[in-house]
Length: 160
Image 1 (cartoon, helix red, strand yellow):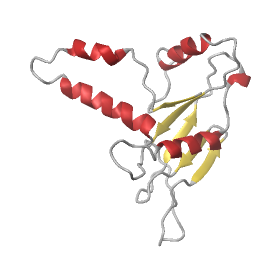
Image 2: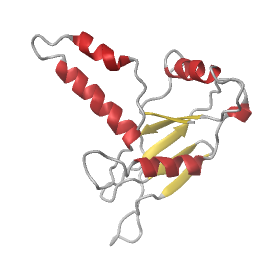
Image 3: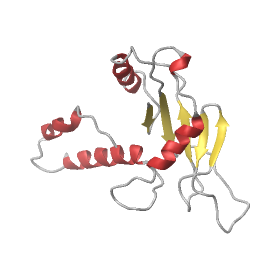
């Protein structure tokens, strides 16, 4: 299982939720990775061939748990992938460590969108929750809106 987060994982929230989920299946050998995806970094990619720029899907491993992945043709800012090294089970064998496979999954998720057929600069696993959050906050400013209407989706599982 690979968990995509747009912010570093919090022991209090994300890691606690993942631990609770995985403990329900403790009889199985489930490998997992918690991946923080961010454009907030100082890394840049440059091409020596100015005609085509940087190819979409360019992967650059920085360290054993960090890499850059270029998702957009016009942007020089790649997305930074950081695999969280904290183990829910305190067991190194349960950690999924194939950084290239994780990057490939993120690239594939950037091709999914309900809004366009074009590949996006952000994978749907990050974009969709951002859109849901934005829409729910916009609903709060509507006069007479009852925020308990959002309780219906609060504890639902969402699969993309």
